[in-house]
Image (cartoon, rainbow, N blue to C red; front, side, top):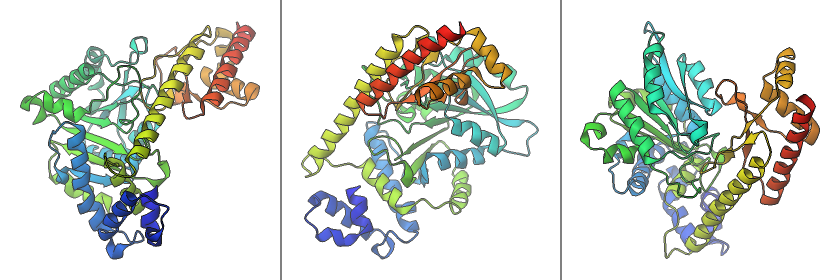
Length: 413
């Protein structure tokens, strides 16, 4: 934010309120902006200056796996990236609609985008009993039936997971890449929470890094599209709308179409420069480094502690089960709902977990997202809760939920 402030109001460069490295970074960015101003469209900065910087970040992240700036496009956040990519994949002239394999639970943006693009969702259910892992064998068995009504083209993966808080292991990612190769599927990897990994033993592996570690048979053949944004991670600046898309093994002709589509949605300049800073943060020896490192570690430590508290409190309540939360910003616990409450919900035209969340709101004033909005296995019910509350406030919320759940179960059992 300091660099963004300096770029927005360059007169602040004369102030002694900002560390010298933030001033140096702001001055470097301003030199690359048209007329040194964030007020212009700045197409050169967005299309030519930023992609090499993003590619350098990707190479550092992936232990030297090469990244070509030509394959990187700056987007107006992850939502626009999803819409742009799916609009390229869907072919409305084909006899069968385009099929998109989507994990369940999923982030609701994907359902809306799939519907908007004219594609169809092919669900694959994550294994809640095994910590929200992905059962690749189960996916493969479901494909012949799916191909009878759609042309399967895309395997979508959200890692770390929203709303589940899972982080895929390297073995799980390898199995998914094998599946994509065997079934000729493009992998769409939503990796916007990659900086939010805090669970014990959890490590983020990018799909691109694993793909290249598997050798040329996969790294030169499997099509991959990955996205990242400034909305999550350490910055969490959702309102500035900036992110990037990286394409691997995608026909260059695709970029000509995407560049045309991009002309209708120019990424915000302030968000774009914040993306640059996020991907190249202060380094050891910089005046801001210790502050940055302290804030980053504090954030991750707090998330880890809040994840632990959430699991501990919710799992003490009979009828609520919360899997370990390893990354992202949410928990997605399963709740038992008595048959009488399920019948009441049906009589009122509601999903059972909507009834549950409405009752919770009326009883406690707490607002939760019901699980059916994210998708869930038939016969199961969930809610999503964020970890962004202060610790004491989160404890209070969780305790109120467990007390409410006991009353709800007693009333409808």
